[in-house]
Length: 290
Length: 329
Image (tube, rainbow over all chains, first blue to last red; front, side):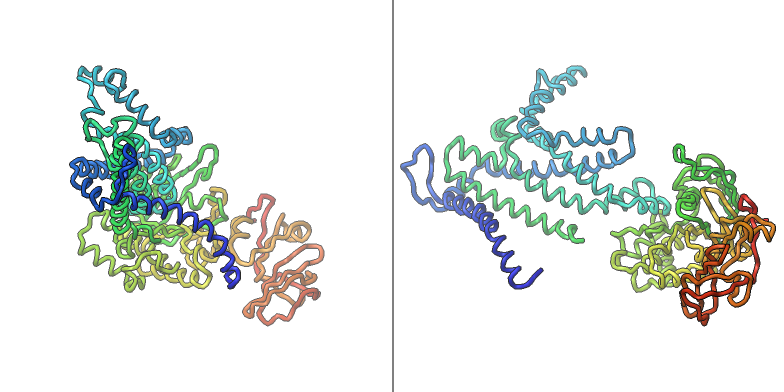
């Protein structure tokens, strides 16, 4: 299958898609980079010109920026922590042989099918709403004041909503990994005198490391760009309390209509994503080797 | 020490009665082999003894104490699994030390026991490798090592050699036998291979459909099988069974003659050679005997007989007689 002519033919046939993919990635990146050094506001299109690194300086000096960076990392870290820990526990639970296992699993997976703005609306209006929400009713039932989730704990609320959406994904991956563990290994550990906690700690958890790595890598990619949940619920507020980097870029691009600054924010986001990816791959990449 | 008694043990999975009721005594230090065709309940029986399955009724006593409802770890038994069930993320050293670690033994004692087991099993130079980097035979040895460090009352082996190639299997068979000689601990060994049973056992338990067909030493079973099932299962090649007029001559419903108890040359049976396999040491010949049917014969290696030859046979050893129900007369 690898004569000279077939190799050439396969390269020729793959070439168009490689080209398209490359252009698709390179052109927007190059344009973003270009605009990030330009003065370009949609409200004053006649004024233009090079501004050097002023946009970057503006970002690095804006107090909101560092808050947004912290919020972005808190969102990624918080959701990862919740989904991996709870996902492992739920996977352990629904891996047990119970009646109606199929239906149970579909119920657990269901939140993943709800699109982000809908999920956020459900949480905002049905659970967290201070008058109509379930949590408010619970608090009043216990004789307490309803908690103003989105006002008092905006970032935690966003993390909670996002974790709810991503929990099924983690559960599903971890459940399939758990099912691939040979039962003889667990039985051997049982014969060796391992308690159920020791079996989890020494047999199941090591078996899951690769799956946990995959969950962390994939979720990180998507969580860095979370936008819909924030837009639907807190709009980045109160103030800038729940503004993340993508939401800050959105504010520059769409609300302030400053394309130049937004482009600079985009480049910073790309750099942040690469730094995160570097540390993730260095820390976890070896788990992926067979 | 490792005396195990089963009293009226039954096991059902829903409506399927895998073991309908069984009594068995295993003496301390004995090498007992459970043998039978696949699905006869021999592995289930082993798992009942191990505690990995619950008995439906009946009692299991280990060392004189009722162990029926004890969890596996409390029974003082060690098991070697068919798939070895090594922990892939741990080194050989950690695999072998795992039961000791779980027992909360101190580190120095753990190391000493691991080193000793490793030297007995020739694993000393592999202690820091992982199971994935070992060959089948080495993995087998690690699994045995993990079992012996605990110094259990009895070892349970669940078809431990079935994943090895033929040459390695013979070697491991001898190693396990030698291990038994030196440890003198009770061993229960499950296999479907009657050769393993014959070569290793002090006592063979032949199982069929959850029932014990016969218990005895290898030669006892070979010489005096209680019924046609045991007669057909023990011995290779299989015993020839003959019904009808030929059996009636011996006052039996069925007679059984082992292939090695038939001589070629002169005799009352005449037939045509169907298939002849010459192994050098032995020859296995299938003969279509007139009026009787196919008879397997084991002859000397030098026997010069080929397909289509007409030969005469004579039964020369013990003729086993069975009644209508297949029981020995």
